[in-house]
Image 1 (cartoon, one colour):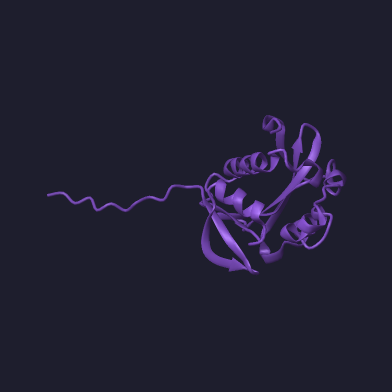
Image 2 (tube, one colour):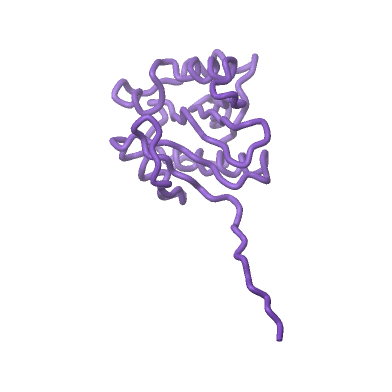
Length: 169
């Protein structure tokens, strides 16, 4: 595995948007992450249009100074839960263990950005064996719901408090 200490999550902005557009996935993977390539174009459009009234924040994933992937965070203005969408590692960078390291970094970054979030959700195409394995390995569990034919998985970030019956005699 590559040295994941060199990974960073950087908002897409005027300094890196062109490099974000260079991130590509193999044709047979595209249906798992977006309807069109470049995937960054889809994320940038959603961050402008704001479907569902959500705040959409697209990020590049870098390894050293190389842009190796993308992810988009979507949530309501006062979030208790957020969704991670369009997660992709460029096809030239796949197979090096960077996907798992990058997604772990994304989870920790989301925790720092939004410390009161109760959970993170993702959807995953049931045919995406790599994605299903990655998310379940990181602790995501099925909610039993589907969105557009894809199972919704949730990662709890906050421990739920157990109601205790403190009776005294």
